[in-house]
Length: 242
Image 1 (spheres, rainbow, N blue to C red):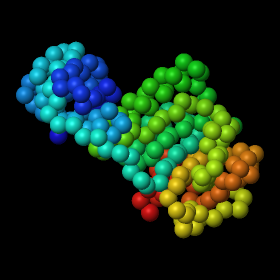
Image 2: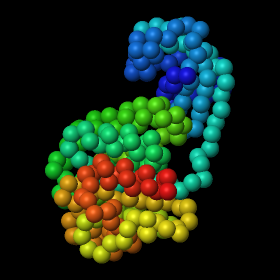
Image 3: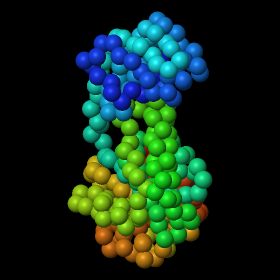
Image 4: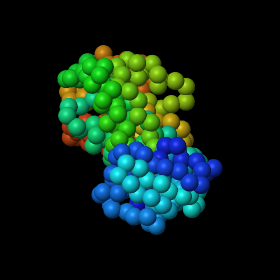
């Protein structure tokens, strides 16, 4: 059944209107659904509603609620991905694949070797696009709880925010003393993992040393040098599926 995003979804509304231009266009012009058809709505916070289309117009769609359920977050480990902002649209791919894999939070960061630091206006547009990617990926993979996408921030700010009690900090790195990822996570109880993925050229020694001094575990992802997107997907996949 086709699925659409409705952030104001509520079990108390039996009839309501969808007005998001992107969702309405996808429903009416791309999929060509009509009055009487049924579809699903999600709000990104665990809700799932089955609705019947009443009126399909160019700019809005009226629906009636058929069934509603609310899920709770799973009790598994939480995964936060802190990732250096790469060039072009690579970060869109990282968000899409890691959303499918079940990441809980994604924090895009500016590091010393980040090639292009966006302006405030560009960062705002970027964050809006990132959220759109999350919605699209979550609909596709049937995910009810969306990952949280943080605004673009400096690495130092992310470290201050996340280096707290109870979190296991992990930094894949190409230098210094390291252990294999599976050894770093072996035997650890479910909790919260925070993975720091560096830019092309890796973290600087100063950045890596700061993380290690705050308790981060420096790890190796193998004998080959991975691109940013490959490393990000690899660590989330391993932590979620191992």
